[in-house]
Length: 127
Image (cartoon, rainbow, N blue to C red; front, side):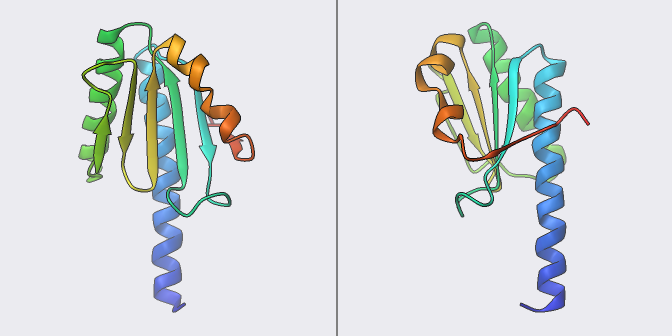
């Protein structure tokens, strides 16, 4: 890998990490509960970070998804896909390097994705 390619990849990784932390902070600002950021770089080549959070109501889940997307768009990060918005029990937004999950409490407990990704390092996003 060339030095320029390595530097670009390293910079992209730092940007993805900061954006994952930004998504977590947006969740906190909008009263999400149980916010978790996982580093999945050593586990899967599909994405680098997972962000999980829980909303208390359909309205809050929509707000969380919309606020995260607006902030990511302001950072020139395009959402590749969104799923679950209409049902609002589990909204998944894919930004390539980052996948954001916004759950209602029952779905979060039922699917227990933190257990599925238990080998991933949990990051301190409040730093």
